[in-house]
Image (cartoon, rainbow over all chains, first blue to last red):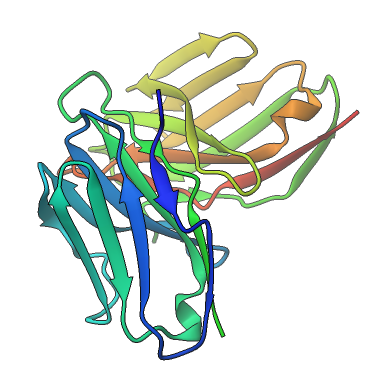
Length: 115
Length: 111
């Protein structure tokens, strides 16, 4: 069974460019999370969707960041314009809410470098 | 104060050693706790979870919660080189909408 799929795995871009990160959650999961991981701040939640609806976006740093979930099998995180301080590893995670311990399953991450 | 604090290490031990990894948390309302393991250039994966106070054992791994001191521990017995990874403690936020993670402790087990 495929886990969470993220693309691209690596992205190098120049400051000011638009970046789009993609995520396919595990089939049947109803919650999706975008996290950002840096050495300084660790793993931080950016946004949480439940049944494709954004529930908590308080972690989105600023208006340059936006996320969408048009259907249960696809989500995007967009940064426009990108800045060097956005360089980090971005993880997508999904879970089946309301079952057991609500374990979150993480994708392999997208390593973003903004020059 | 961050809600979940964790010493980043790094921690280096020889194969076979007993390892103790620790976190503290600030909110006494947190009810259950998780340990995630993250190998280099991979996503975190759930290792263990435990409710409230007490111990939970799974093979060489034991998770312990002390609610009175707001302290979470993960013990690894007979550590192996394959245990080399970053270990993150986590707890659901009060709304239950997401996980709050510690920064992670990087462990290296040498053969």
